[in-house]
Length: 286
Image 1 (cartoon, rainbow, N blue to C red):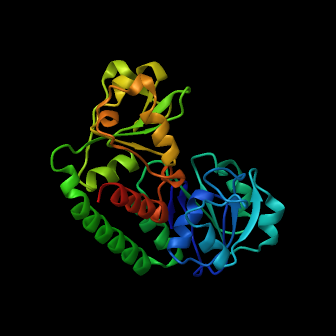
Image 2: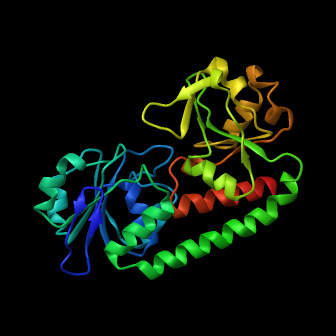
């Protein structure tokens, strides 16, 4: 099995998987993989009281997936789970790449990099490891159908002005504007939007990211050039806050009253959260 850290040999189909990456856990759940336990993050706006992402926390609970630890990896808890496969991320805050050698002594360990591929590509790659290729095909077909239906539903709203700016709005801190290379930008493009350009004078690429532009608060009015604005990791009250920000009163989307929150689960897309984002866009524009 080829992974981001080289090939790993699996002698049998896994029946008891442990994920040390809460991000990868969502993909394993979508694939109906035999997931026994997972790492978690501290409770926050994007996670539940157990530290699991809200878009799939109920599914994990229904399948009796154990939350093994929050934050730093607990090798004893992972060992006690007696996994026959461990899944690790090589990137992000939930990476345990520095523990791979130790984890490999417990069970075969597969390492995936979710920072350089779409959730669809990641789903296909992970499906091969857990023998869920048919399920992956079903997921991608279901999602493609949903995208096509949503595109048709919102087409009338985009007939005249289809440009969109996508950002995290954390005033008075710097904001992050997502380009067409981002997962959110690619999804918006598939739905019929054109990603609005950001003037070079408004910001610069965020550290370590080619798909995100860091924009200082004083330059945000220059960066929001779209006729529509989507706010990532946000609720409707955050959209209202942007619309009443006096420094943004002259931006096109504010004047159009076309500022929409995509939910707290829209920052890190997987099958579940991407589906939720589409529903919210259709609700807003359909």
